[in-house]
Image (cartoon, rainbow, N blue to C red; front, side):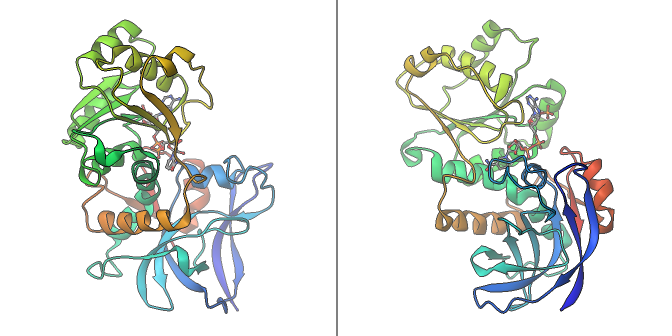
Length: 339
Ligand SMILES: NC(=O)c1ccc[n+]([C@@H]2O[C@H](COP(=O)([O-])OP(=O)(O)OC[C@H]3O[C@@H](n4cnc5c(N)ncnc54)[C@H](OP(=O)(O)O)[C@@H]3O)[C@@H](O)[C@H]2O)c1
């Protein structure tokens, strides 16, 4: 037994993390390994689960370890690995943790154990990258049959949206990627930062439905929408998109991934009948482990080798500062938490 520093949280009443020492017992289970954690990150899933507000654990009311994933050294192989560890009583914001070997994804051999840029990048971007990878690889229909794949990203200025631009083009062969957002200044910055983005579309209360329809008519018909926001931004986009299509028989797949802009929309039934339109979602529920496993290995390889996440410069902070980092968390400037 040894002592390890960790960040735990009690969802109510304070919802503030506590940095404290925990007892640690290395695993004796041969299906598990001990990981010496190097880097973790706060992202929306981490916060929602810690606060008991995510659909995957909404009933949690006990003190629990924060975190769902991270990067560290697998002590049984001495390899640098990305790992996930979530479920009742599990977490990753701790110096050492026992993890099922099924959820261990080694870095490429060429990445050194002290390559902190690659390590922090994977810690910060893996979850956001998973979102688009799972949507394309496990939810999208007939992807290989779509000619000149055209993708629209709703919430393109967010971390998951940005990485989705690269993943759509580099990993799934999208010919055209458009980005939708509510803030024109941020959209213009996005175009500067990610040159492969083909066009931007501003959607907010100042943009009329008529002008939005005209805007979409000037673009190629969309095949796949990756929607990170839901809510009004998604509904305004969807309504104008449906009304602007040049070919109503061409399949339009709307894949919802996040709900940062609202939990519900009021979808007119005409939208479902006037077009060849599929509305579906992608998240933790619909995917079996073996599929997700391949996706995580691809993400670790691509992000750590710099193929994905070119726009991103990770900053890092010591885990001792977790309370301050949690309270002042800014999703637009993600930091790695170093253990
Ligand atoms: N299902 C999955 O597999 C999965 C995986 C990862 C993430 N997600 C979810 O995807 C969503 C985005 O994640 P992220 O990491 O990209 O978050 P993020 O970095 O915080 O970005 C949020 C994006 O949503 C926009 N946005 C925020 N509040 C909004 C509102 N009220 N109305 C309209 N747009 C709004 C932001 O626009 P501005 O830039 O203008 O602020 C930005 O484009 C989250 O809900 C997250 O939980 C799901």
